[in-house]
Image (cartoon, rainbow, N blue to C red):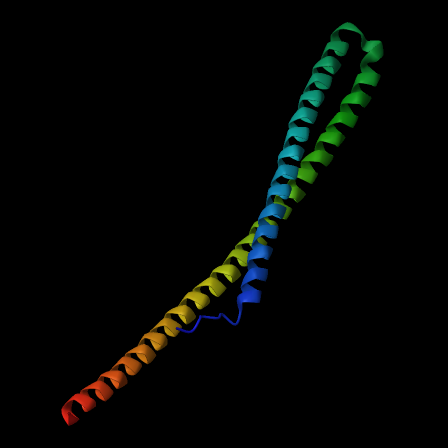
Length: 147
């Protein structure tokens, strides 16, 4: 019996490698997004504490109020900057998910094509074997009738 050979085996292997790479990249981007979210939460806590200390300075030490206002303003600016990074990273994660989906679809297309071609090959091979058996039977039957 002949062996099945998929002409696009190299393309399938490349697609599978690409899929693995896209999965790895998505995991990295999700990890980066998680880290940025944590940094944003941490910065929000720092800003809230600064805001509380600014309010306390209003009540207890007005001479320090300017310093607290400046510090609080810098903290809110930093919070906004990190929040913007989180939003940008969400877009990156979404784009990476799309690339992963496309790589998965490409891989699946090639796998399905391979299976279809294997099924066609197997059917042809079975027909060929049946034809050989039929021919052998006719030869055998033909010899018996002439005996």
